[in-house]
Image (tube, rainbow, N blue to C red; front, top):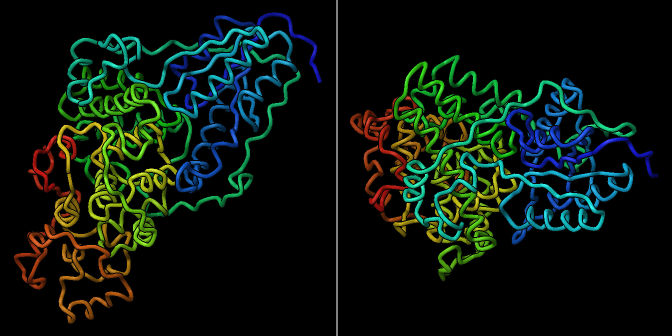
Length: 525
């Protein structure tokens, strides 16, 4: 049915990973160039099918719940300023073509550009729809801290293949654009459009995930929650001033910023975080920790620009280096990894946390990725697609960039980086509190000995009610370098005290080491 044409110019704003009102250039451009604005979100069925290689569900329950909360929050925000958010199911290019036919004289379609193939294919189809109907097609770049056009490289092909070179060039030669001042009232929608209700997780054939009380991310989606989190982490608690010291933690909400899930959906602008850091540095304190938040935002930028430079190669088995590696596809080993049944407690605890909550610490991600690719030698894409399914903060560029890195076929100046699971576990969970939290069958093993149950005597295992091969598995693989960190005398008091450091009492040499994953020359980290 064709509506009666509304007088004046109409702009349709397709919102994808920019689910916020603050610093939203798509909405601001529409506000300045139209009398009526149609903010639109499409539930694209292609996001809810199987992953490309291994057919895991593309969008798991934790991220879906977070997405629906974010959409609900944005709709509430837009309603307060005289607008609304239209929801539709279908391919965006088809939905928008139908809207153009229904509304009448649409003057433009505006959206934020993305960086990877599936999203770019949508943009290409959408551009063709606009051309067919004589509608202006307007895109903006808004997902990164530094604007693509402000990079100090003539063309994206000149992007350095080493992060440090990128970071130094950008910090020396670029400025972050200021956040945009948004209007207090947004131009209204044309009449006669049905808003459609926010669907439930069950509408997508999934179960609403229960919140696990152990989660390190007990938060809801949406711009309002994101801004509250920043207020809490920066201004209410000053936690940001010790971020560099605590960011390798494993337990609880406040060891890191936890901005990633909101950044992934665009609920918070990286430029807003940057401005708040600069304000905090001016009014409170400037130190390595405040800088490190920007450092991490730059990593996020870098992986997005790497995706622009290399295109589909970020998804290829041979990676950015076109490197032949004899990856295995042992499904039995993969099942053990994804279910947290490898028999290596530090790996299992992290994988169970991911499955139960959709979240895992940065330290955990580096370790389980190293274990899959270096200890098991499995196809790195199995891990990347499993993360795509489960992570609440899944971001295509960061996820695939990090997995390529772990696999040694991405942007890594030093190849063959391999994490030592036992050393890492003892370094960052010295007392074993994290293991006992997520692997309850080992909770009666005291102290750091919980990292290596296979090294305990039969009497010690019996005392802890652990039967290897029954209540907890034997390790599916044993790396020779682990033996240097296994306590050969588990009942020794000296060993217990050496390992008795919990995650909140991180030894000094691990607090200020930078990101050893990226910068250490030591192959045994």
